[in-house]
Length: 128
Image 1: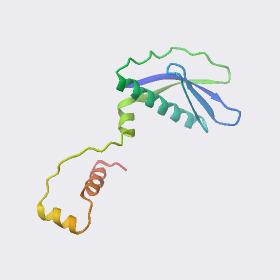
Image 2: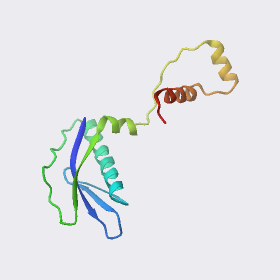
Image 3: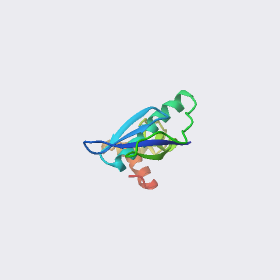
Image 4: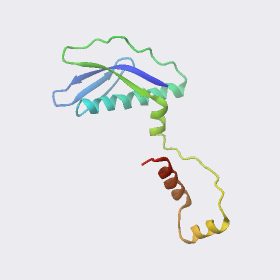
């Protein structure tokens, strides 16, 4: 599910931008506009996962938001499924079948089979 909310970016005196998401009542900030957009996306993602996990309805995005002349209003989208995958660090248990002699050789060599499997899967999938 992708959510899209308007975000108000306010230049700060000390530099950078404050990012306010009125529909979710959250603030964040960045050292420049690009980072403020990334931080807004992250904040929306965090709140979005909480809303999704609680089974609550998402607030309807505003069509317009009040803002000052020096502020920038932009829509920021978040693919919640992709965001969840990027932040979920939970490991899962998988049973793997391999020949006994190979398991013994790995143990004798002090090789962590799970680490080797993870590295091989990442390489196969082109994941860094």
